[in-house]
Image 1 (cartoon, one colour):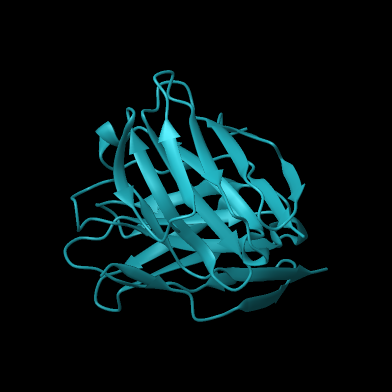
Image 2: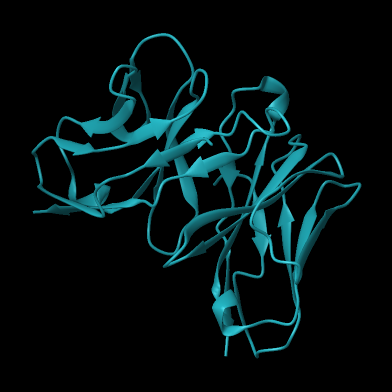
Length: 117
Length: 114
C-alpha cells in the first residue's frame, strides 16, 4: 500500500536558521508527492508537489523540497525560517492503486514546526 | 482562499444525534473528497465523489454517508453520533482530469459531540 511517514512529531528551529521537515514514502511505481501546511483552526494549504523532473521542487512562501529516489525521501526545506512558518506540516502521496488513479491523497501524521525568535 | 466552501464551521451536538456537513467545491472541479482529522488518527480519507458518483471509499463508518448533487456540492451525513466522532471534517476538491493535481481544502467543519 502507498504510504508516507513523518518521523518527527515536532521540529524546533531558531528564526533565521535553515529548517528541514522529513518525509519518507513507500509506493509502488513512481510517486506523486505533496507538502501541505495547516495553520491553527485553518484548512490545509498546498505548498508544493513533485510529479517528475527536477529533484528540487520550489513552492510557496520560500519552501522547497528535495526528492531522493534512492532514499525514498521527500524532505521539506527552507533556507531561513520565520516565526510565521510555525504550523503543522503534512507530507502526502497520491494513491495510485486500488481502483486506479482516483486522485486521493494519503497523508502522513504531520510534523509541528516551531520557529522561535 | 482555496475556493472550497464548507458549512457549518462549528457544530456542537449530543450523542445519538445526526448532522449534515456541506461542501461546495472550487468552480469547475468535479471531484470532492472528505477527510476526518482527529488528534489520535491524523488525517483519514473517508470518501470521494466524482461528478455525482462514488469513486473511492476509505475508512468511513457505516453510520456515515455522503452524496454529491448535480450542482457538484457534496454533503456528509453523520448519524448516531458518538463522542469519538468529534473531529475536524475537511472537504477538498480537485480537477483530476489533469491527473497530477493537488487537492484544494476547505476550512473544515469542527464537530463536537457532547
